[in-house]
Image 1: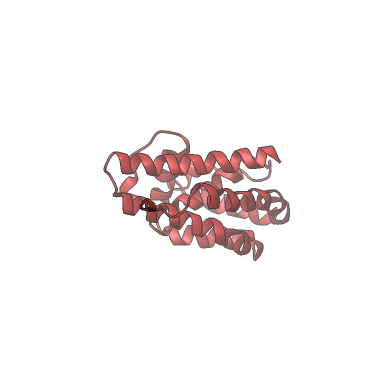
Image 2 (image 1 turned 90 degrees about the vertical axis):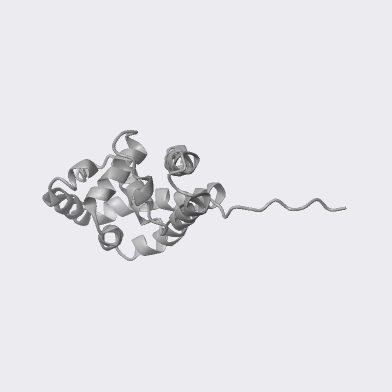
Length: 173
């Protein structure tokens, strides 16, 4: 269980840290940063139900919402490999780019031999994405059973770590 908790905590920490870096460097406003994080939290809230209706279909839906695989691979690389181009201005307020990146990061961490998905290759050759999704589809029950615990933990931890900004209350007399 600690592996699940640590992974969920680490990816949320990465998301929050990178968005805060964008805010602190004035590449996005505080309001936009909060909206991006709240969008991520909404995706985390919805994911367990969506994934239970079909893992491959859910991943396809998330990828569809991104529209551009090049942006997705750039965000993934920026978020988890600490390199790549600055993508602060490309982050969507609905949270799909960040959440989809996190999903694929967790899939990578599961190290399921039958499921090899090299995200950096998705934008180079769409066949790589097709192969990845086919491998997931062929092993859907196995992947889902391993993935769902991470997704549920991610939902709980995102509720704790990513919340609506609070305004300071005025002191009571």
